[in-house]
Image (cartoon, rainbow, N blue to C red):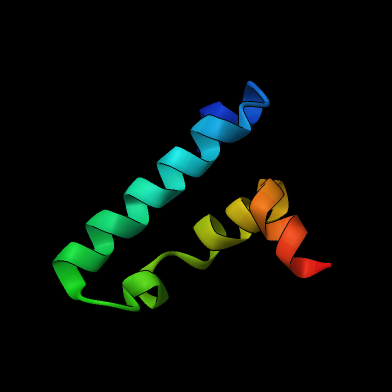
Length: 56
């Protein structure tokens, strides 16, 4: 995610986060995002276009 952010590549950021969520959900079941490190979620929220759209 940090590499995508450094390159200002929002598509790569979304793809990386979505893949992380898919793997976590597969391993731990639905709503496994609560197991993610809070810093990971915060990083995504700060830089995601999708999050900004939903926040307004």
